[in-house]
Amino acid sequence: MIEDKILQIYTASGLTRGEFALKLGIANAVLSHITSGRNKASLDLVITILNHYPHISADWLILNKGEMKRSPMESNIETIKQNLLDYTSKIKNTNTLAINKIQELEKEINDLK
Image (spheres, helix red, strand yellow):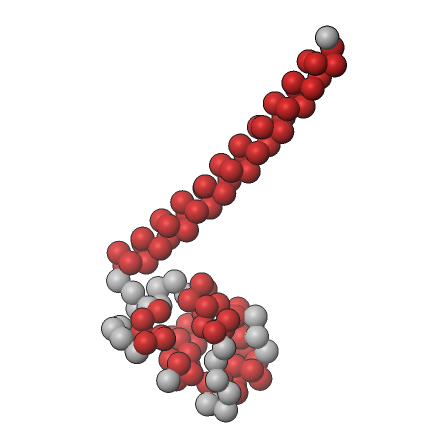
């Protein structure tokens, strides 16, 4: 069950229950209810865990396939992919700013005529 695996991740994290809950953005009591089996983990929580712990295999956590930790190559690919997405976003923002500046300058030039 995912709830048992969340307990394994929490235990392996080396954090206190409160620190782990805080890192995931949930109340300590919510974490306690999930790890005790009283409540089910939400999809949002699973996604949050995978975002905060990129070395954890989604296949292991969700599908019960493979090992808990992803291979270093898989983790590295995800890191590279995220960096590329971040850089692409920065380039788009820079491009938008440049276009806006060019339009401002063109307007100023036209006003001078």
